[in-house]
Image (spheres, rainbow, N blue to C red):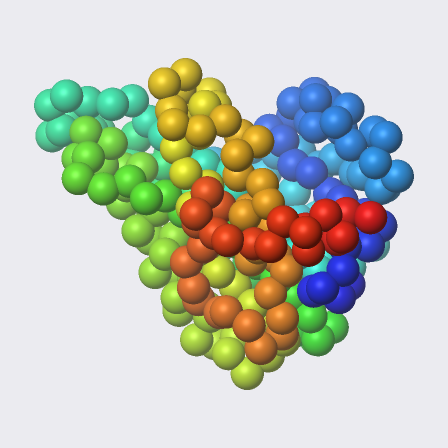
Length: 219
């Protein structure tokens, strides 16, 4: 896949269960793109490994890895009340699983001479009431920075993306933006050139991707 054109390469979507992929599959049913679903709970190492196996069993070259799965444990007004189970769940899903998925697919990207990895982060700050979530996103940033250093002499680019505060199950109904507001900016780190940004931060809301170029890519 060229970084300057969107092709009809297959898309693999993930959910905790196959049933949870149904809505996404429905949205893509008329796109002309072949879509596959893999499933597994990302807080469990065995299930993460099973997700990786499901992808490999499809015999599809993975060119773009979009790590956007995350959990947020409850808000604690008393920010010393976060228990270890909350910390572990957050780190397992938001960081450990991301690390495993990167390790599973980046080496083949290097061998294939092309790859784009987008690790979704957050602009959250000054909120110890959500300490496990905030700390996990700092860890995402650090992991991405370190991997980018190792990938600097390859055609694989790895970057972070902040989608903004969105009206989702995680973001809640009072968030600033609708999910649709993330486009076209959420695609920007997937479209960088081989010598483009690496280990950089993107904002899907603020990123100034040329809208006319975006429209051409969808033709």
